[in-house]
Structures are given as C-alpha cells and as structure tokens.
Length: 65
Ligand SMILES: [Zn+2]
Image (cartoon, rainbow, N blue to C red; front, side, top):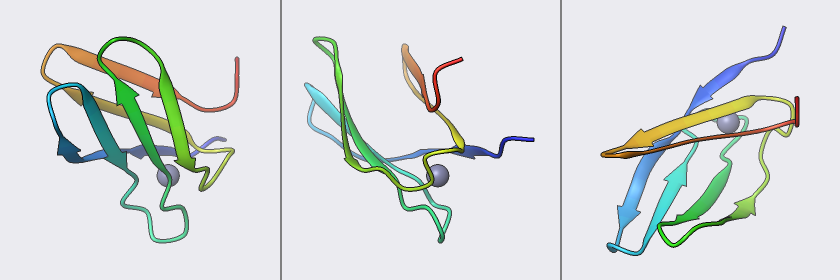
C-alpha cells in the first residue's frame, strides 16, 4: 500500500510554486512551473504518492503508474 502525502504550498511568486511535503521522514520539495514542467529539488520518499493543489492548478507526482 502506497502512502499518500499532501504537499503544502511554501511559496508562490506567480510563475513558480514551491511545494513542500510536511512528512518529517520525507521532506520532498519541488517547484511547479505555471508555464509547464516540474523540478524536484529534494526527492524525499520516492515511493510515496504526492498530491497538491493550489487554485486552478493541481498536480500529482510519484512512481509512474
Ligand atoms: Zn512526502
């Protein structure tokens, strides 16, 4: 059974959104670009499914299904 972590929005400069996983043993961090694309800064728990949402944007990341 895979864990699901809900990412918090740490900052948003209008172009890029920084998401941080609040799970203490994970701490995944990634930047979602509104222009498209995503950059993972800290991989954290690679096997957890990460979900996050802000305004009209939503995203998921994790192991490819
Ligand atoms: Zn996580």
